[in-house]
Image (cartoon, rainbow, N blue to C red; front, side, top):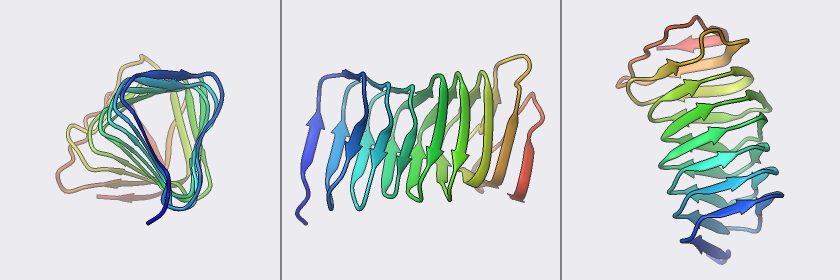
Amino acid sequence: SGGALLTANAGFDAAGAVTVTGSNSIINVNAPFSVAGTLTSNTSGAFNANADGILTGNLAGSSTYTSTATTTFNGTTQLSGGGIMTFKHVVVNGNLTSSGNINLRVNGDITINASINLTSGTLTLQGSPGLVKTASTPSVTNFFILAVGSDAVITSSISFNAGGTLNV
């Protein structure tokens, strides 16, 4: 009840930060977009990506980020905050790191063209085929807690490390 609602039906490129703030505020994006600065979703707000998105900056928040399309991480990106980040497909073209008690859920593929070093939080693979690697040699592929859902199938041509817990 209350919050602001913004629906973007045309694509956009944000050279700076995008922040969802305010109780129950929501941004719905229905066309391809990119954010070069930090994308933050605070309090009880939500950022809903219903189209492909490119994130060059960080992704942070204490509420929700939901993507029903492909989210591409370019450059060095840090995921942080205690919110839930749900993705359909993820492409990592840079260095993806984590801090804080992040909660990531991927319902489709993860394509790793560079490195993932998630030293905190939980990554849950809920879809099939699961983890996909396309680069010949990643520099790092680490997960703190990796959980694999009952419908997920992991197909990986690389080794990866679960530094905390592996739940299958």
